Image (cartoon, rainbow, N blue to C red; front, side):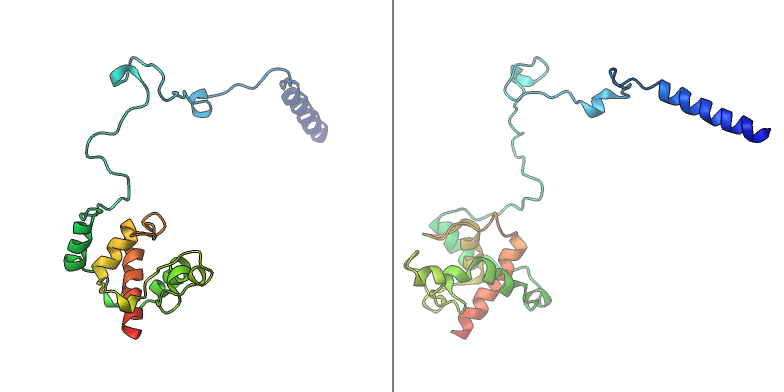
Length: 181
């Protein structure tokens, strides 16, 4: 007898729960702003913002998250100052990690060559001309870092591809290549 009551109760609950569902009407939505946020269109008028528009300029002195300011300007004077004064913050363990070689082989070898002689694949195929050998240049770790950050002549900046730490690793590896030439 108890078994029949349990089965009847289970069937009754199943019918009750399934009868409440209506495919033509949507379910209730709790906290709809979490699903459908109020989106402001940039450059539209809004009285609550300064100047009456949505798109606002950043506050003066604002820097991007994770951005590390670089105190040398992108000029010949900045290059000379970096060459004379800028020193690597790397420890000896970081310099000997082999990561600099890996990064050099990814970003630099195609133009500068495996030994830093300026005879990379792109130079051999005459896509770029005039890539100097490291032994012909008077370079320091500061000048290498500066050129990686801003670029020089046909070489573009690598600041978007490499973090400051990675650029220092590459600069250290370039100096090792120069000493081997």
